[in-house]
Length: 129
Image (tube, rainbow, N blue to C red):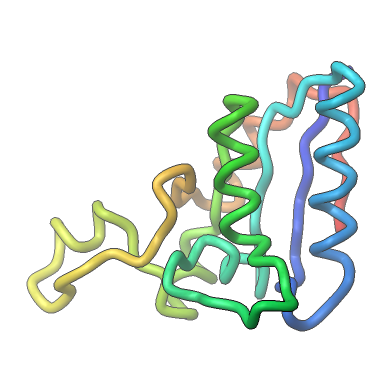
C-alpha cells in the first residue's frame, strides 16, 4: 500500500508526532511505500535543524531527516506556517536580502497546502497525526 502521513504537532508538545514517526518506521519495515510526509501547523518545527534536545529526548526532526534519506521519500513543509515560525529554506535565503542563513533540514521542501493535496491522489491512505 502507498501511504501519505500528515503531522500537525511538534514532538516537544504532543505524543502525536512520536506516534507518526513510529507508524512511518513500521510501515516502511513492513514493505509499504511512504509517498511523502507533510508537516503542518506546529509540526513544521521538525524541519528546523537548529533545535536541540536534552540527552534524554529524541530529536524527531533529525530522525525524520534520516528516515527520509534512508527510505528515499520527500518531506514537505507547509510554506505559510514555516515562514510564520521562522523556518528558512535555501531558496528564501537566495531570494531575500535580509536573511543570511537557512535552518531547514536538506530533506525538507517548502510547499503550499493545495500543492501538497494534489500530490496525494496516488496514495491508498492519508494518515493524520
